Every structure is written in structure tokens, then in C-alpha cells.
Amino acid sequence: MACIISLVGRILLASLFIAAGVDHVQNFDAIVTDFNQHEIFSCDVLLQQELFVQNREVIVQGLVGLALFLQIAGGLLVVLNSKLGYLMLIAFTVPVTYVHHAFWESDTPVQDMHHFMKNVALVGALLALLAAGCSKGPCAPAASSGPVSKKKKRN
Image (tube, rainbow, N blue to C red; front, side):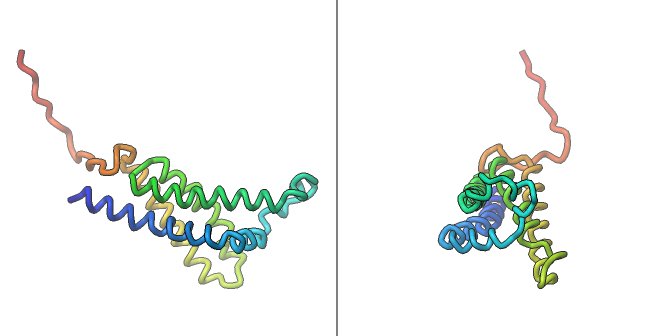
């Protein structure tokens, strides 16, 4: 029974990332435009680099593509209880939370704070699942709560 509950929980968690990722793939240009509106590339060092300035659009498209890959592939791997999947979703969620839900700079701070805290909770859930001993297959057994007695072999 614990195996089924674990699987259902991972499917529900992963569905958030997979559904959003598929939606973002379908609206790729709008996501790139939204990403460009955030001033994460406003540091003087980058803006002084001619190569960066000339290729900004391609760089942004590449970063959005990488984010979508982490989001969708990570979600699918979480369903399979893969350590890599948890790490991919953490690597996706942390920077996205900082860039897109910076409530301390927002015109709608309450709404962005809710999204920020939701994402912090998601990272917490991913970390808990990561620490719970994934990578032992899609239905890893629960850890023993006490010492296991071993029977001695008789020759």
C-alpha cells in the first residue's frame, strides 16, 4: 500500500511541473518575451560584451529551453523516483522562484509572496523525497525504523 501512495504522491507532484512545462512549450515565444522583461542580464559586465549583446535572444531562448527540459524531464523522472529528477526540479525551481516571484520588488507583493512560498514548499518536498532514499527504483521500500536482527547461518 505504501508503494501505491508513494507513486500517487510523486505523480501529483510531478504533474504540476509537467503540465506547466507542456504549456510553456506551447507558448514558447511568450515565455521568452516574459524572460526578457526580467532584468537578470542587466549587469554591466554582460552588457559590455558585444558577443552577448548580439546574441541575447539566442541565449535567452537557450536558457528557456533548458528550463523547460529540466521541468518536463525532471517531472517524468520524479514519477520514476529518480534522484536525478528531484535534482533537476530543484535546479529549475530555485532560480525561477527568485527571478519570477521576487515579491520584495513586485507591484503585487502579496500574490508573488504566495507563489514564492509555494515554490519554497515545493523545494522542501523535493528535498525530503531526495533524502528519503530515492534511486532504489520506482517503489523503494520504506526504511526500517529499528535494528534488523540477523539469523546466524548454521553450517
